[in-house]
Length: 141
Image 1 (tube, rainbow, N blue to C red):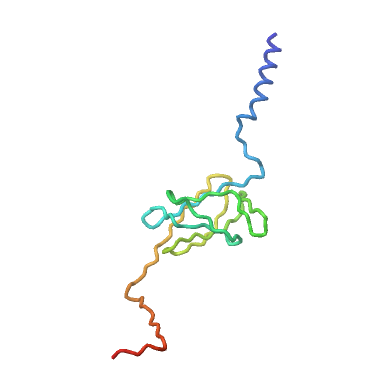
Image 2: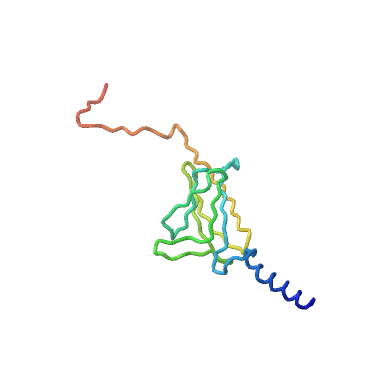
């Protein structure tokens, strides 16, 4: 009797295990997370992340400045899946900040890239308004 009970218990456990397991499919890419901050470590809500072969720009989360993906869709319809060991090139930019181009070696897990964008310094004395002259305008004395 105990042998029958043991067999039934093993059958129930084996049949319910896949329902609770959260195994990733082997063809899923490895997730890579990019967090974009300024010099004061505050998130930049207007930052975008782009791969050089990709036409789309991906906006970061406005609250924490993060972007995460495991696959990118290229303009020719192909997919670029992130795999362990691959070299990933990304361009991170935001209005008013210097654009950063980075190269990252993807690991099996814990792919967190912290990017600090320096603010573009503009000297107000260097900017001059352009003079646009029209044919009917006469110079002032």
